[in-house]
Image (tube, protein in one colour):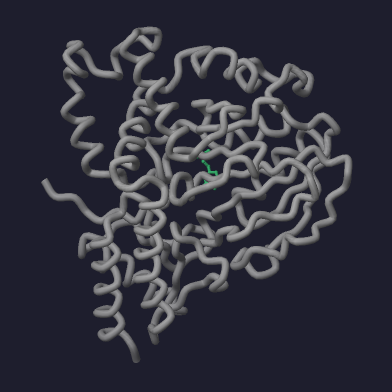
Length: 361
Ligand SMILES: *Cc1c(COP(=O)(O)O)cnc(C)c1O
């Protein structure tokens, strides 16, 4: 068996310990003679799995008691619709456009009400986070929406926007559990888990209790009402059982590895290795304004498309996988999520230095 260093943006690398444990559990989970994939979601066994997962993520993030944690299907994209359906009482909300995922959420919200563009960094290919200290937020807006870490462009909000007292809704898919967070600053935090937490197909939504009501937009499907899901502890219908189980293993792994503070230290160290190299390179350069750089997704280019292609091909041959940039941006992107070991980043940087010495004209 040989594992590569996988820099995929998502689905992405998972901790090796977690994969080994899951493999060992596959034929016989804790002596019950079946795997988690085969057991009833109403069984005592699964009840323990989902309850433990919830209590562990509550510990990790310090989630206050007045917030619900929902494990939902449909991925992050499903919440693009669920957010306006559940929150648009006045049918108006403000969106900060910092990339494709924010734009998709904004376009989806337009199906249900008035979505207002509060700020955008489209003018410079989303390579920075706009100033959000004094946005044109009006009193009738139901919430302000951000995508906190922009997976494709590699930017991250280092300070949250001034929402002028309005609810903040944040998509944290690609920075989920990467550093400590103050949940009380948000109305809703949600993330698709396949970036930094687990297998694809699930979103975890953390929602302040008073926002979970029956007053959804008319026609809201039963499954998309947060109230349905909250009243049934995420078990209204069959949940993604195996995905919840793997996320639970990842939560334990995080707790055993210093929690979110420990992850932040490790993530800062990894990102610094790569950004320091980029800042000193004569061939490669990062594409994001320094103060807005993500710790998770690091896009970079040589400035020469042919050379970029060559880099991607040669890095793959060297066991560094999935470094090709997003199809809309080109170049390269290294996603260095929690489960990427520091050795992977060191190997990448050594490879880049070697490539530079061979290809610099
Ligand atoms: C990947 C991603 C999504 C989409 O997630 P799905 O689970 O595929 O719907 C949404 N937002 C961000 C920030 C992402 O990185």
